[in-house]
Amino acid sequence: METEVEGLKIKIAIDRGGTFTDCLGMVEGRNNAIIVKLLSQDPANYADAPIEGIRRILEQATGKSFPRNQKLNTSLFSSFGVRMGTTIATNALLERKGERVALLITKGFKDSLRIGTQSRPKLFALTFILTLYPM
Image (cartoon, rainbow, N blue to C red; front, side):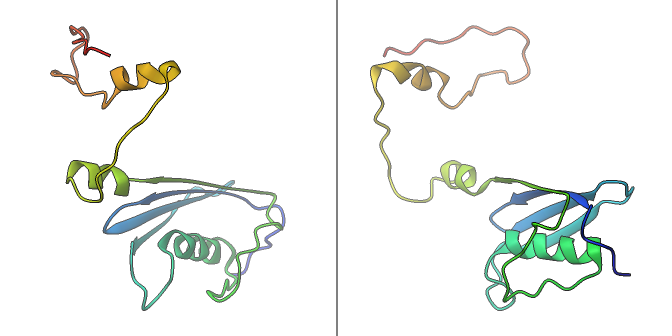
């Protein structure tokens, strides 16, 4: 069933992982969420998983076609927002994949080294002793 695009308020959240990209679409005034799960890389079917997820959500929300070979025009929606997060860089760090890097900072950002990885011995402890590293 085709829906009028003007006046629709759509929020989309995307989590792009190394294997899968999960997309959640919420249309204001509707109780059901639109969920799309895609392979993060599938060049035979689409060039970019997040864009493909947005395209599929818009098709389900409106009942209209949004062809892959055309830019997505969201200007007719009353409100349209996308939030996206990714675990690709985090996974690369944890798995020690990728190129070697160095961090250079100025004196004003020395706290970044102290904050560091935010790791602590007992993750859920309400109190803990902070180990200070020389700076």
